[in-house]
Length: 487
Image (tube, rainbow, N blue to C red; front, side, top):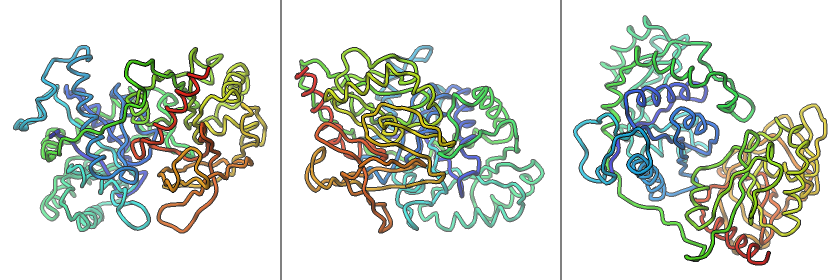
């Protein structure tokens, strides 16, 4: 498969690449392109922003979790889904042959045709330890995508050229094709741009002025969520209009069209539920408090045969009717502790279901919700579900951060000697006896105990990406089927 696409990266976090990425997405959408969004790394929030702008899900790409073949499969499968949506289910979109992009590429990208925009993570070459493993650059290399570098040029002039030159020196694949200067002026850009193109032989695509009204606030785990940003769509629309005036979008599209053809692989997910039998119902918490959900996790569960029903621990009174299994992903429950406590009927519904033997997965914020109490930043206690005997408190700093591997001490949920990959990112700690697994930080000698596990449960602070180890999801679904058949 061949699809036009670009990777938007930067020398470091805080360079403004998220806003510029969204402005590019919006500008392309305004021109009639069918934009497919991706995010490098284990980020939950940026894909929410992408989805809010494009109204289609954004997927994660992460080479710590998957190998090159799987990464390419996830990428091309997501684009194929978009094409299928456009042909079969899209409203207000023209037709088109889903298989057309599997043949030879057209000479140029036309309106109403798909184009992918991949937002990088951290700095371009920042990976595990001092390597580029799991970096934006490694992902761009594996997907054969050109890179657009966003430079925070505030307070700089000729030094911009030196910074770009340094990044080009490490670009052994020749993937960096253009640069956008952020937080600068027309005068600085017009002075620097000709030198960038003549000395560095890449495109100076344009610039964006600093705009206080277009900034997006952040908190301890990253950006605020899209629902918390006032007039987000209006802000991004304004940014896209400015981008069209100061950035050469036509050249950006031409660069995207240099993306190379990828092998046409499909990621095969095992059908765990027997054909002809009713799908087990898995209730997945999804609202403002619990929103850290990988789209590919949901896809894996569905393709393995489960029916997914979303519910809100904030608003709903009880679990969905017919629930056979429960998943509580992470999010920001600490911001909604009074509301979660006040919804006693939901807390009791979750508690009673788990005590009855219902299989459960819980990650980070979802794990906190299962505790007896959670304390806020002012040390006020809030009653939660009471399934996990213990409490959670804010440590005021990152307790654990980064990629990890997880192995059970005694095989309960996972097969013997199985090591699965995950990531952690949290300020809270627990007093519970979550010691069923050994957790090892990738790229270091650091390790600790974590997770509470059993044949039907796996709960802790770690976040998992099911395409990395689909058998994790398969085991859970099999236990959900057993529970349903026993009811």
